[in-house]
Image 1 (cartoon, rainbow, N blue to C red):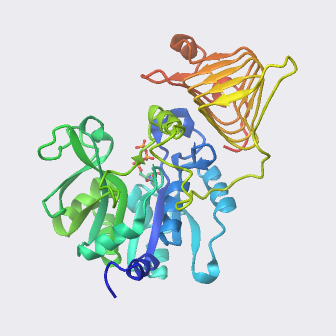
Image 2 (image 1 turned 60 degrees about the vertical axis):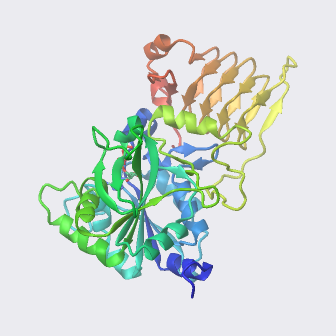
Image 3 (image 1 turned 135 degrees about the vertical axis):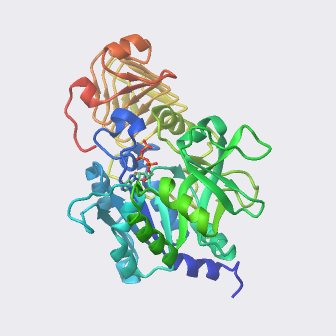
Length: 422
Ligand code: ATP
């Protein structure tokens, strides 16, 4: 069988077990991850961040998936239980939740990302995959992992790391690597203070996307060695990958569009500014991430909700949303929504205006409220006449968080309000 034939790729994906790391808090999202882990944070009007790597797996033909959870996992667990039960067990397909449950010792939770995988080696071994695809559960992108696994096999790699070019100034948030002319990784440093740049391009660095393909035996061997290494943080980026780069064949896989050769869309929505921007980016006529692409659907759990409606209020003021995305169950009555992303079951009441904002599900915007450049968390009720995003000092004084670039975050806890399911 030719190595590029679709059947070759489908054999590889069927022989792959995907592990989605979904146990971290994502501390740089501050109060947005106070009650939920970052992979469970809502994104794009009706999804949660973890739906992106999960959908990529399913669309790539990888249908054996373990999701490793730890920090504040309740909403993530419910979401996956309710939304991801459609895979067919009869065909050996599954999405399983693997919470930290002290399988190896009775005293330790997952101490790092590598430890999270190490603690599940017996389950992984029972599934007997040839390849293990390890994915961060907290990035937004659409990617055919089949092409990456084929590249891994064709290049004779022991391990392959997905990579993307980022501004050198932002590179210290990522694992950064250096590669030789053949694409072999020759150095890897996690979140370096002085990120190495791409030769000839002082403004760019090659960052890890947190996507790794391993040959099974190599991963098992490296995890056992790492577990015995004193002083290790048991983290893929800090410990395991630098170790493998020194002794094994680690290849880089640049994430490019196969037709145009251009770098593909990938976002780490790890900060409030990045989260706000990535959500609003979805709105444009030709957004960098197209959610309306039937060939690569993003699967999710969706509640049964009526259509969004836009109505005249009792004073005959029209309710409108322009240059916006509005999800099911919303009602905009006698109010104006501009350039905003409105999640499910939001109410915007008369005389209110919402501009350049991200409203998470179940938000209520009272009459005469004015909201601008804000992220309003799930279950917030803004009382009549509230002003958000107009005066950073007033927002801070009210207990809201204002980022350096002037985005205001409001959560129910800041308003002293009860929350439902987050
Ligand atoms: P931040 O975004 O603030 O750096 P983080 O801990 O979520 O915080 P990373 O350390 O980059 O981010 O984690 C990469 C991925 O691994 C994320 O998807 C995260 O949820 C997950 N993760 C982090 N720590 C663990 C752990 N101990 N067990 C399982 N998954 C983890």
